Length: 198
Image (cartoon, rainbow, N blue to C red; front, side):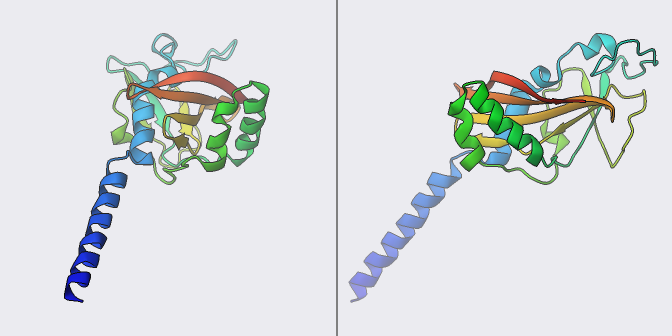
């Protein structure tokens, strides 16, 4: 009986260690999200703003552009993930219309973490952009190039969908879904679809 208890104890310990190794070695969705953003930040935002000082160009806009400095261009970043429920429906429709059903499973069972607060210190590959937390700012003055925000990400193994919004004001902006694939431990954009423009 004593021998049986030792065997059961050993098997239980071995099983627990195996599970820790198995799940501990896999990247967490939070880590993958920041890896995706760092691999693609300049593709999401674009670098045209370096020349124009604005994230969105509005025809006949004569406002003074003050966001460009020797250090870089300042962008306000929403530090809370945007609830993209309405856009998720558009996303499902676009996946079918654009014949990219290989991403359909992400909407059903992809990880939707991180939800909550965006840690700007983990976004490190921003080029000449300076990220400024929103701190509840509703309006963007001319000292910033614009505002960016992220919807809840869908991540599963080597595929991801990131909903990214960029705006110059409450009257000018767009939301884009980026479909990404991971190859050789680097995330790259497979396709992008504009979901909304205002």
